[in-house]
Length: 266
Image (cartoon, rainbow, N blue to C red):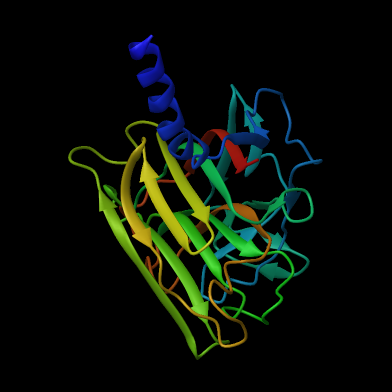
């Protein structure tokens, strides 16, 4: 009887710890198991804007650049001198987003992907504010889950952009380097866990970065990261950060995404 009583006391002491961990539920996913992009989940961008970074690609809606095949999303950049509506660039590629098809406030995102490398190649998995409550970039924030600049094939970056509108914008982040090999050798799971006042990055289940300090010129902490954000996947070519491709860069450059899964507490 005494042992049973002690066990009940133990359970009562344990309850606060058990209830402090909320259960995560899968709220959105794309496994890319079909033969075409699911347009109920994705919008396709077409532009030659250059991302504000002097990028050299045209994003277009073409199976050459964007398709689902063999259980993967395939985004491919080509050195094919495309011309769209009278605008020419040296390269074509693709960029997709979940805006108004998948928007979340606080979530965990898992993306299993294999990345292209090479001078001037710039794959990215990132998030932008859906409603821009605090104003234009970067007042309403930007969350970079993964960015790789191709001349550093073993390293990827995780970054937050915040503060005020350009040029009063601020950013902070860190980079992760593989112990061996490159990100083109195999698939890896890039994850972001976004909670109120705390954002963490993991790779293949290993935590490597935590950010808990940022600000907004137009809102109280944890603004701007207290509103709905959506997901973007793209493969840029050239620009101010990675530099432009050179003779060593191999085309087509291919980004493969096996799955994307989004979880929320509840």
